[in-house]
Length: 134
Image (cartoon, rainbow, N blue to C red; front, side, top):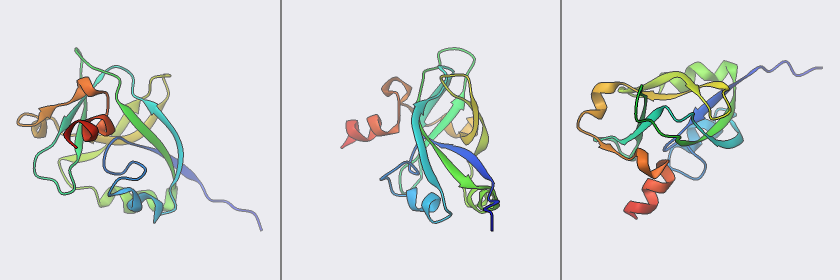
C-alpha cells in the first residue's frame, strides 16, 4: 500500500515555533519541522496586545521592512483546514515570501491590530523578543 498523503508547507513566526506554547497544535496534527529561515526583508513584526500566550503579528510593508526569523513546517493537507480554523483574529494566513524568494503559506496579521502594538522588527524575530523580555 502506498502512502498518498499530500503536504502543505506552513510558516510560523511566534508561539507555534518549536518549544513554544502553541507548537503542540502543529505536532498534534502531524506537522513536522522542515527548517529555520527568514522572510524577505519586507515585513514588520509586532508584539500584539491581548493574547495569552503572547503572540506576534507579522505584516508585509512597502518601506522599512526587515527579515524576520521563522520556521517552516510541513502539515498533512487534510489537517490544514483544522489548523487554520483555530487561528483567532486578527491573525490569519497569507502567502509569505522567504529570504531565498520561495513563497509559503504562513501567519499574517490584520493591520489594525498593529496600531497599538509594539514594533519589534528590529529584533529580527519572536525568539529574540522573548529573550529581551525574559
